[in-house]
Amino acid sequence: MVVKVRVALLSILIVTLAPMGIANAKSPSKNPIVVEFIDDMAKKHKFDKLELKVMFEQVEILPEVIKKITRPAESWPWYRYRNLFMKQDRIDQGVEFWNENAKQLARAEKKFGVPAQIIVAIIGVETKYGRLTGTYRLLDSLTTLVVDYPRRSKFFKKELEHVLLLAREEKIDPLTVHGSYAGAMGKPQFMPSSYRAYAIDFNGDGHRDLWNNTADAIGSVASYLKKHGWKANQPIAGVAKVEGESYKRFLKKGIKPKVKLNEIGKYNVSTDLDESSMLKAALIELEQKNGKEYWLGLRNFYAITRYNHSKLYAMAVYQLAESVKEKKLRQNISMRP
Image 1 (tube, rainbow, N blue to C red):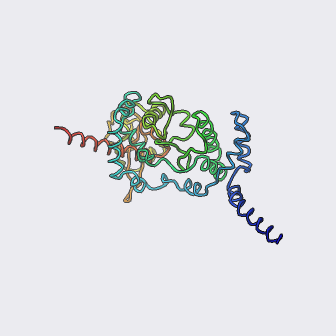
Image 2: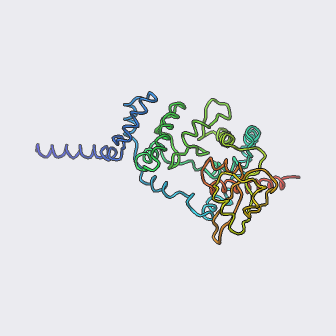
Image 3: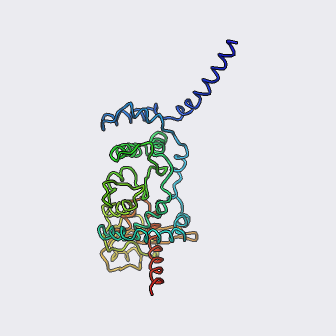
């Protein structure tokens, strides 16, 4: 009888502790990198070490995060990447978003010089106008990248640091902060460091809320682009034609504008932009199914790449912005008496 009771109690104990054991197995709290990070946060920023240890006991390593970050959409050919965003529903929803937030967009355009359609398009590309802001708990995704993605561990460790600092500043529980697999947050998908440095309180309520406050998202996107070199009333990009082989020297100069428009002829490049202009441009090559297409990206195009360092991203934003603007103009014309 005694033996049966002991066996029964042992069974209960195993069942009770099993989930805890599984959770601890997934927890990175004892990983040397995380232990060192906790020590650094306590020393540098006066966090309570015990509280951080308890918090990281609840953090999980997510293998799917590593799979996703090693196969980003920006590695796709242009024709495939473009199809992610240049869809009728995203254009239609962009016009709806613009109509619903017309006052805030106009105010941001006036204050920062960034056209409304560009702000709309960035939020449209990033989160489909706030519909898809990310389901990953940031402490999980960023810790996974710190521990299991050594190539960029240093970068993501800084972002993890910024998440904890942001949560403390904004009085948010860090374990409730969600975003993308790479750590981007809110309607405009700011990384934690960008959130702390560039997010603004655009509606004046005393908080910077990029998850729930569309005005803050709009103002923050415009402010970010302005601080990264956006120039009001300047062109963004233009179609280019290339001949011969000289254009390849232009391509090698990279995505940052370095060649004046009035000098592109020596590379056998022509454009629909003003070729007498002193504005500088970069030559952009994009892969289509049946060959290459070429564009010139100017300073404002480069500013968009500071949001995401990809020429594909910047071109998707530019083309979505133009499509949304065109549809809105047609809509306005059709509504006239």
